Image: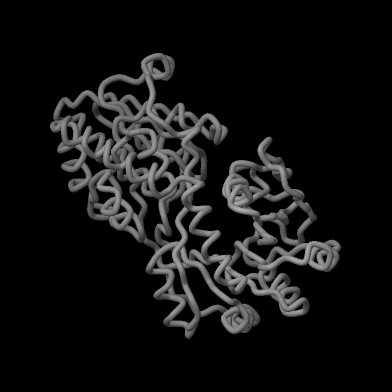
Length: 378
């Protein structure tokens, strides 16, 4: 099967691993289109396309207009030439139905009479203004299949009138980066003591890191020996540090800033409990929780809020506990429950890692994607 894949996320090398695995299945031939550079929310300088060493298929890089904007960006270059020369059996567009880039590639799919498969993660019903509402409806009528990140996303599609296939596709995890291991030296280097509670990701209000800090402060008041490891950067960096400083009792919190993805597992392994306090907004709720899967791959049990897909993921894997969103007392109690029950914590760690290794590896996700694309190619 000849697959032409379009993904702005593949400007980052680790996101290419899914397509590396897809290329290893049967007689698949892959060609990938990605931006030559992308304005990342994690950096003030644009990120240039970087390829994994294991990429052994053609990758076409083009500049994009409105770089960094998921909805407005679209490619500039000889796109027609790629479709004509490669003559794919199916075009896979990893972008939302209403986006300009989706419309751009769907037009090529129609022109060359190629089936197109879209991947959407929007799990909140929204009415978009013109012209995006028109592009969205056009996508529904053209796409052979629209993959979803979770059941909530499918519900949104159905409510908006989409009647076609909507198979589910999870995010994958690289077990060569995220795995259990000895962390004594790394913990010592970071100055971590006691039970380590951790978070990794953007430091923004949506992620509720302040809830974890407030729960930790309450635990310190009961003389619990804990440390916090907060990995990432964002607009809340200063305010979170101020919150830590306001504690009446000393609280050991290590802020590392952003770290390279290839080193993320080294920090994740230092955590005894991973905490994800995502809070639902009018325009956002947790769509999947990839970092949960990465924590579980490291053998770390998870405590997550009941925002979006988090409770579904934790229930599926049996790898942790769920607390009521924004409820500091409930989170404190859940953390204490795991601290006081090491056997339960160990069982959750084993269950979570087992499920991830069976269902959420890039190889497993690629096999699911291959089945979906093969069916669409007809």
